[in-house]
Image 1 (cartoon, helix red, strand yellow):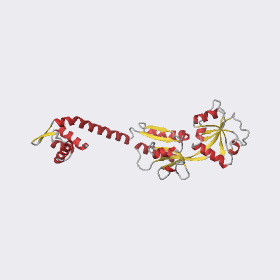
Image 2 (tube, rainbow, N blue to C red):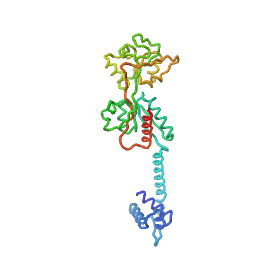
Image 3 (cartoon, rainbow, N blue to C red):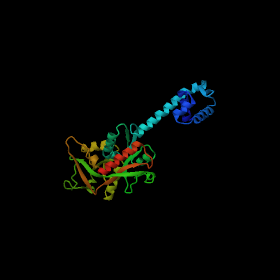
Image 4 (cartoon, rainbow, N blue to C red):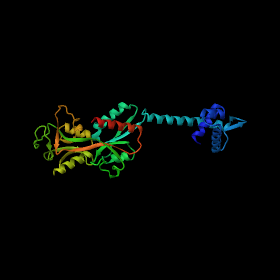
Length: 311
């Protein structure tokens, strides 16, 4: 059975005749008669008794009518749901992000998006590893991802999700800084106040950092390797909150994105933030699959583009 067969059948019942149903549906009378005959062929039984030019619902038609009405109601509910999503009156947007991008720019963009579209729920997840972000977006588990970009605009770590499979929009360059509590002994560091701290002078001090395999850890390891020294890892953890707590307690220094470092607080307010030399930066942006997107996904990218234009 097809939906147009059921809608025609119900129209004949509701309007009392083929002629009246044809007028209501804005089709010809022969078209209505042909649709009813097609429905009866599919069912293998007549649904109307025909008496001259009149039709009357028979037992088979009586049995069909409740299910036909319900099917038409269900179809209308489905259409209304799609229309609601298209008009951004309902729906959900799935995002995935590196943890260090959660405060900025992710939280800021989600906040702006939710102000504009309060009826859309947003689900934000962190990947098992930085390398997973590209595959999470490519597979459709999330519609938009926030990640580090290479100099070519591709997604790092995962060759299966390069620029040929995903599109990207660059957002900003994220600057890394050294952050520590004033109680930490930095006697070996010889840098004037406000001047960048050389990585070579930090190498022998206790570093609190992310585990291997994360984007931040890779950048830190590459930076120390570039200056020819290895850092002294005191604490490594996959929990960003632990890094902040250990640094605030004076357990060592860390190298973090500036926006993350600035969020670390201590009761005495003695958190120090300084630039590092040579500088550590990374390009960050959003990634998404080319082609059709959900209305919520398109609306979110509009927020992203407006944020870029504002600088």
